[in-house]
Image (cartoon, rainbow over all chains, first blue to last red; front, side, top):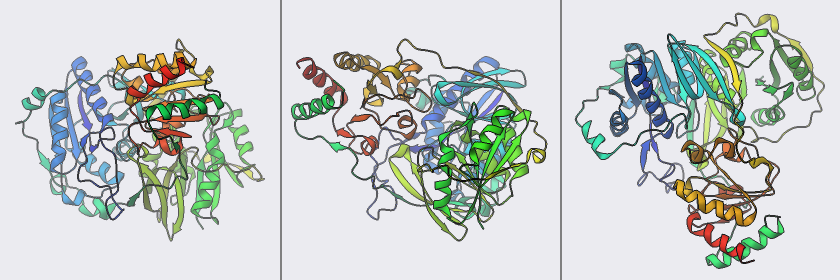
Amino acid sequence: MEILVCVKRVPDTAENEFELNAAGNDLDRDDLVYSVNEWDNYAVEEAIQIVDKVGGSVTVVTVGDDEAEEVLRREMAMGANAGVLLCDDAFEGSDGKGIAKILKAEIEKGSYDLILTGAQADEGAAQVGGMLAAMLDYPYASLVNKIQVDGDKVKVGREIEGGNQEMNEIHLPCVLSIQTGINEPRYVGIRGIRQVAKVEIPEKSAGDLGVDEASVGQAGAKSKRVDYFVPDMGDGAEMLEGSTEEIIEKLIEKLKAKGGL
Amino acid sequence: MTQIFAYIPFKNGVAEDVAMEFPEAAKKLDPNASLTAVVTGSGADVDTVATDMTKVYNEVIKIDNDALAYPNAEIVRKALLNVLPGDAIVMVPHNTFGMDLAPGLSVKMDSAYAADVVDIDGMDGTSLKLIRQELGGAVSTHVTCDAAAGAVLTIRPGAFAPVDGSASGSVVDKSGDAGDLTAKRAFLEVVEAEVGDVDITKSDVLVSIGRGIEDEDNIEVAQELADAMGAVVSCSRPIVDAKWLEKSRQVGTSGQTVKPKVYLAMGISGSFQHMGGIKGNPFIVAVNKNPKAPIFQVADVGIVEDILDFMPDLQEAIEEL
């Protein structure tokens, strides 16, 4: 089974407190900590486990700048066999469809049976996998939390509302977006990263991929982010301040009044 | 005139709440737009829901076909493509079905796409002015979306005010236009969530833990506080992903829906998927060491502290009462 996993380098929500820049229209990116999108780790782990069972290989791909190479290396240290970086100034400002178009061009140069993405990434849109599948005319399932390979089909579980699981049978080749919790992604140590530090990662431009520059990037985007802002949510929570002792005293009074004690 | 179509999700013959929220979203986009509900399914349920929707929408399209008995996104997409005009603005709920359907629908309609819309600032010509969130709700963004050739928008359930059902619309049966409804993906069954050792939906007070608990061994700290309060420990998704607690303890749209009187969110950032599982307007206390955690926008009381220090102190104070 030849598996491609699409990954993304994103600001780490667990490691950052997000602030706006001085102009108030973008994040203050100076000190942001980046990492691989959390969902993508589960997708790579799942791909490795499938290949361990049925044979084949795992390739990881990302659309990004030079710095995005570090997430490919991290996933290769987990056990992915190869990485590809799709990198071109023309890709900057792509919307979901732009990213899907770029990935489609790379996929058509290979011969993959299964394409995995994370269920969502930093923008919370959960869009690229479904778009990619539709562009390729492959079947698709989102929010996948179980995969069982069965010949030229896969049996997949989708996480739906209320903790229930929707089981489907899908013909290969297909695209699946992977939900967190499907497995336990393996730990990657410094040693693992070192072992793949010298592996060459091919870099492909719009020209290499045969992608029309006008159809991707800012030029091809129908959806555009204008700015970032912090919404005025009214008063928000009443913040309890003072020493811990004082805070606890105030909290206990409130809990008593509201039936919490 | 702007033509907006709203896909109505339903279960057991009852439309989901978001069906009452689409009209407000449509009005914010263009108060003069025509708004049509689309109900797909099979048998008595689709008739019941379509008729119910005439109280909310002036026009309701019904697509009745055996292949639509369970909402398989690939099949629903084919039906919608055959029935809707190519330049339509289509609204779909941002839930587990919408995420399955909407991105591919926008590709096949060759229209613009915007996901998880939480507010709308109207239209400027054919440009939709939308508001979204990124980074787990930590920041919001203004987004423009060129809808000259149509658009597919997923709408966050609960983000728009529900309307009263005061319309007296009519049902148009488009079942004959649905076309070929074969698919490369087949629905097999729904496996119901396992019942856990504790039913968090029955507790009036929940001590709910998130990433801030940091380590499996620290769950004991939350359990001891819960014991002192006569409460039950619940959690957010990362705790279940890490297999530290059972799935049945998870609060959120993909877990349990709870209706406690008091909800203590301990080290929980407060994603909309998590908050979507908290109903009945409980008194929410949020404790988080990050002063910018989104949970502080929705909680009643906020405390900026490390839960691992705060919970034992609170437990001790309660035990001394």
